[in-house]
Length: 168
Ligand SMILES: Cc1cn([C@H]2C[C@H](O)[C@@H](COP(=O)(O)OP(=O)(O)O[C@H]3O[C@@H](C)C(=O)[C@@H](O)[C@H]3O)O2)c(=O)[nH]c1=O
Image 1 (cartoon, rainbow, N blue to C red):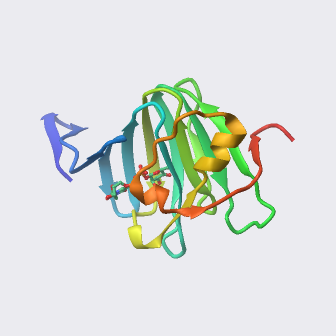
Image 2: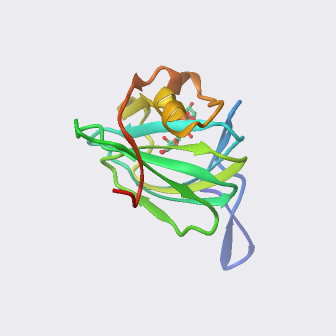
């Protein structure tokens, strides 16, 4: 990976080796070494990314945070037929949040948002499962317009109860 050494011995993340943009915003891969990847995505208000999960053996643990803006973050265990979709609000004041690899994960941008996430496990598009929960969330949370990518629109439709984490 290309690093600046202008203030050796400190290295700085230089031009991201991969920048992927679309109408929702962009993804930058800031660091990738072995199974460890650090990514940052920007999304405009109203974008929903997810729900995504990578199937075994391409499991992916994630540690996420919000750098600016606010999101509703969502997880559900697709293998639990009685499962619910859990959500919580995450802002820059929230600490890093761990997302277990068994969960399908996604978020809704309540404002324009910069989202950063560390993945233990490489990106494997062929192993990715995508669940479309847009209608479910629109009904449950009154979210208004939801902007999805074509890929996420084609995800498996999923309808489950939606619960705020911490509520029983
Ligand atoms: C995430 C990612 C995407 N891509 C490519 C695939 C595609 O052409 C383009 C956009 O990909 P996506 O639409 O899947 O990007 P995105 O919707 O931002 O996907 C992310 O969503 C959040 C909720 C997560 O939990 C992440 O793990 C990841 O799945 O970028 C990579 O090459 N590497 C990556 O690591």
